[in-house]
Amino acid sequence: MVNPQFERLTGIPAGEAVGRTARELVKELDPVWIETYDRVVRTGEPMRFEREEPAFGRWFEVQAYPLAGDRFAILYDDITERKRAEAALRDSEARLRGVLDAMAEGFAIFDAEFTIRDVNQETLRLDGRTREELIGRSHWDAFPGTEYSPLGSLYRRVAQERVPRATEYLYDWPDGRTMWIDVRAYPTPDGGVAVFWRDITDRKTAEDAMRDSEERYRALFESMDEAYAVVDVLKDKAGAWIDFRFVEVNPAFLAHTSMPWPVGQTATELLGAPNPRWTQLYGQALDTGKAIRVQEAEPTLDRVFDLNIFTLDRERNRVAVLFTNITERKRAEAALRDSEERFRQFANASASGLWIRNPETLSMEFVSPAIATIYGTARDAH
Image 1 (tube, one colour):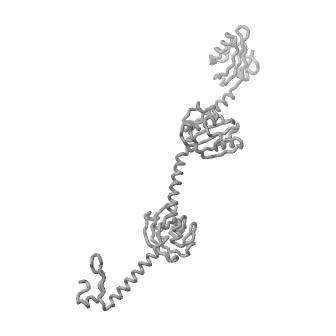
Image 2 (image 1 turned 90 degrees about the vertical axis):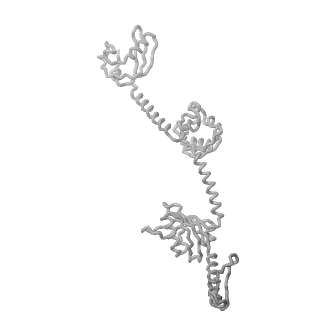
């Protein structure tokens, strides 16, 4: 006997099924069906199972009950769609697991009680423990010291407020290791928290070293007697160097130049008509990639500078210049030259004999024309 659903589920008309054996109806029937029903009859115990039948291309959920003699009853339902959905879910979970395990950052998921439900391979590598040592444990127990830390507070806020949050946290592992971690936490639909995290210890160490270096540089920068400036050299549409903008200066810059605070302004904005040689020299340093040592005057400031110009960043047309105000020295040199020239003119016009002898070598450094007249010898004889 069969009911109308038999035909719907198997595609075999009920009239054709009654009185015939299963193998007569389905020649390629999997023998396991016969073996299973035989066991029900022999043991007298009902069975419930799920099995695929390739002949129908379907999955069935089956309940088999023993009856009197060699008879048995079967209740079954088509669960093909459910099985396909389960297989699709398994495939999806396998792909997700593959993605998570291939990630270069750690992943963990907690339930609403902060019990660890899953972790990926990177988490295991960074942590050093096995999945069995982590899954099913409270996060607070697995990672001592985090429950009442800023990290624990962040996890609770994510769970309660249902908004993502991120932080950087220095964690001390129970085995004595210390690691800076970058943490991003997200709420999950079931009230838990999903966490992505990575080791940023190297980056933090580099940042600390950079800060130390910058602090030392800044101390030198602020205390050095020489003026220092960083400028971006500007071009016109034709590609010619036309001006420069100040990016950074040290305190000595103001003392050496007597200029107002220049950062963010161009030389033209500050000085009106600066010496065009500055732009030319800065552009030359960028064009050639070679440092330049030069002395140059700035008439608008009535000063002369001794400069070292060198390229910092060619892509940004940025150069640095280290310089000193040598105006007084240049004035003293000019005054000395003027004094020497006046002395020479006086000595050459004087009827008195004048000479200058080097005190160490006793050689003559200057002999006036009158010496030849007085002594009757040539000037170079002395």
